[in-house]
Image (cartoon, rainbow, N blue to C red; front, side, top):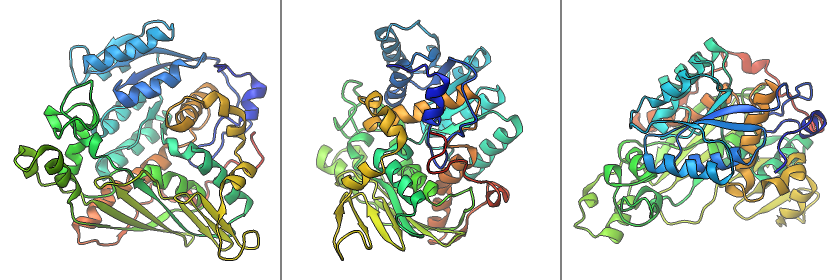
Length: 453
């Protein structure tokens, strides 16, 4: 993989599109390589680590994980790529080992790919140590977590990027081109979500060789995500994973850059799916058949925007269903829906009929996908993981603003605790906090349709 970009290539690429902006063409790489550390080398961490190791402009100099099996697998990845062995932390299973890694210094940035509850404290510690952060979703658990992460970033000035890869999905980026070109007219309503059957992810038999669907254990008896993620379904009821859906919707509607969320409310259905899965797979007598899951099987959140748009999100992970993020972008001139891979544009499409979206996607292919589609082949999530890592690395190299910045991170992620509050208060509609303290009015998108490529 060719990955040390010269100035011309950097400017041509525009550094990378993320939540709602491109790095402006005024930014160019000021250093050819960056030294990165990674906290969390589990299954998600290993996917991101592969993208780092594929690059010639990245040195992975430190790895931290308190699970020896996963740390060992990460080291084997490094060896496979023929890279120098990084310093390791966490072999002693000390939950605070990441602080020793940060204190060791000589890091140009750190990737955080740990269980959700660790994201905020680890990001805060990194920013306090002046180590730029690329954090997996979500940004925090409680609403106070989000304020703490934001205030730490503002106080320290340390860059923070939320690694939301769906903002780089090929069709999502083509639709952004179409939104900017006015294809849909004035936007009116958008939808998205996380509609993904995770039952086989939330339960297994605890065997590291069989992390998916091998049993009905979780918590201390589970492995990988079953060890930590399932407990959130036991204890919490809300939109637990909002950024895959809200990220693209937010960038289409210029949230935090001329627009903002104003109100939010959330409804949750009854919880049946996880219990039924345990009974079907493990039997009614299994001890986990008595667990009371709090998370509703289908959680529906609605948001209103300052400029008049509405956005609907759905979290649906406990019932049998094919994967879909359920995107819909609808305006005065037509709409796109990803579930049927279709689009209808008034005056272009036949009346009351759908067009296949592929022809439109080809026409409005994003320049970054035109340039890097071949490079992204084999990367996680259909290439999206290449682009999100590329964006973070190029911003570090250029010392440029992070494409999905701190305001995006806390705004998108705070949907979770706000949705929990709404449900707990009998589905009450709540005011959405303005994390920008009014700056959304003057913050402008720094991209234009043909600028920065």
